[in-house]
Figure 1 (cartoon, rainbow, N blue to C red):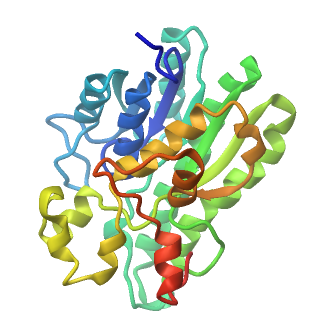
Figure 2 (figure 1 turned 90 degrees about the vertical axis):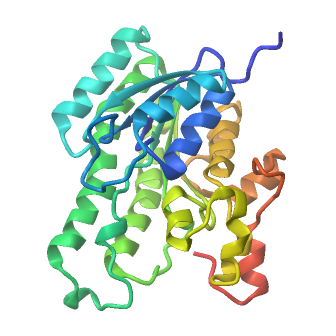
Length: 294
């Protein structure tokens, strides 16, 4: 049997409960990796977001695809819990950490669209930064030293968009642009240590929450296009998952250090398709319609 491309590799996907994080964890598993799936929602104890998905399910999916899935309940706003997470990884994996994916978010209910920032609840805007920016800093702070010790590793910041353009809401823009700069800044400081940092964005993500929002399931997702025409170019979380897996297996990934990359461009480069056989390309789709490509 051929060896899988990420067999023997160890990854931490922070924020693997659902959406892009789950898709990334599962596709890393399909490539043979050992994946620590972290988040706050576990069986019998959901987070305050109130969704049914859990990191336990994600870890099971990783294992079912051929990897090793390990669920570790972690609140990434807590430095103590994050520190304990990486101490566990270091002990269980003999100091090995090849890939850290920062995908902590939790800001859906905190985003108030079509409302000026000064009219939005300040507490929501600040909590969004706590969950989507501070958590990424804490997680890299404790995870990256494992990579520096071994003089190798890859840190991927997951965000929404690949530019610094305004995203329709001040707080949301700040939360999604910050990871792009985090990746660029970390790349500079990590360069002497042979550790790479970069950012990756999906396109129009067909996440569990988005399917629920449109009242459809994956099997009949096209029924939502009548309500939202842009949904025609949506992608499953496994599309960006394959993008991350491809980057993790690329021996020349250092050439991409500091950049903000897109799932659709990485699909063109590495040749993968979505799990439904499509090759969604949000960049071309948006440009053809005169829409901004954030």
